[in-house]
Amino acid sequence: MQRRQPDFPGKHPGFKPGVHYAKILLATLLFSSGLVHSEQGVKKTFDENDTQHGYALVWADEFDQETCPEPRYWAYENAFIRNHELQWFQPDNASCKDGVLIIEARRERKENPDFVADSVRWQQSRQFVEYTSASLKTQGLWSWLYGRFEIRARINASHGLWPVIWTLGEKGQWPASGEVDILESYKGLLLANAAWGGDKEGRPSWSITQRPIAGLGDRWVKEFHVWRMDWSEEFIQLYVDDRLLNTIDLQSTTNAEGLEPPNPFHHPHYLLLSLAVGGHKGGNPSRTDFPVYFEVDYVRVYQRPLPHSSPVSHP
Image (cartoon, rainbow, N blue to C red; front, side, top):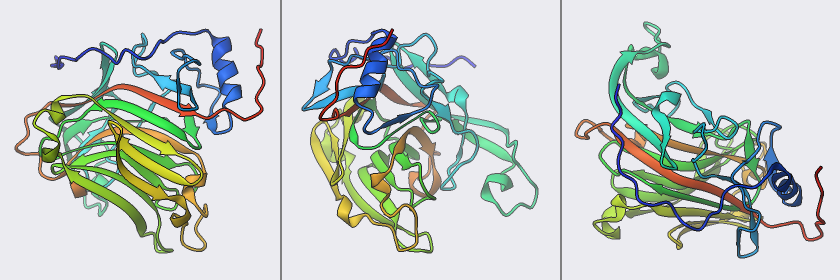
C-alpha cells in the first residue's frame, strides 16, 4: 500500500551527530551511574559535549540512520496488548522520513492471528483487526535510572487517538513496577502522570494532571513540542516546552506492603513511544480520517556525571 506522508518542518538545530565508538564507550563509562544497557546497544549519533545544566548526553536517537527505526535501540510490541484498545500493534506501522520517526495508525481490516472462537479474553475474541498502529520500546535494550529525558514530537489530537510517550519499570509487575506518562493525550486533553502499586490487589495509585488542549492555542497540535522528564532520587518533574505540568514527590510513591520493588522510581525504567486507537481512554475513532501520524523528531537522555570520574581510554 502506498503511504501518504506528511510534510515536516526543519529539525531542531542544536544537536551535532556523529562521533566514533571510543567516545561512546567513554561517555557510557563516565555516566554509567544510571545508564543500564545491553551489549547490543551502541549509539552512533552522540556528542558528549551536549550538556544541559550539569547533565551530559548519554543516549539519543535522531532517527536519521540508514536503518530506521534502529533495531539496536528499539523493539516492538506486536499484538492486541492492553486497555481493550482497537489497534493491532505491528512493526510495519513505524518508519522514518527526513530524520523523523513516523508512527502511523491505519484503519484496515485483517484476520486476527490470535483469534479463538468462544474465548473470554478480549485479545482472542476479536475475529478481525480493524485498526493497526505501532508501539516502540527500549525494553531489553536500554533502560535508565534517573536523568533528563527530552523528546521532541508532534501529536494528532483527533477523536479516538491516544498518543503516549511513557516509561515502565523493569522490576516487578505493573503497577508496582511503576509507570510515568511523560506525554499522554486523549479526548482533547493533555496529561502528565505517574502510577505505582496502590494496594496488594493490584490497583494503582496515580498522580495525574490534565489540561484541555484547546486552551493551548489553535496551532498547538500543528506544531512540534518538547516533552521533558527530570528524574532524581527525590522528584519526577514533567514538562512540555519548559512548562511544568506535574511534580511527583518520590517519598509518596512507595508500593503497598509486600509489593516489589518498595519504590518503583528508584529502579531502572525503559521507554515506550506508542499511538493507540480507542480503548478505555482513547474514545471513538469512527469520525477520524485515517491514516494518522504521531511524529517524533528525537529522543535524548541526559544524566549527571559521577563526581570523581576520570577519563578512560579505548584502543
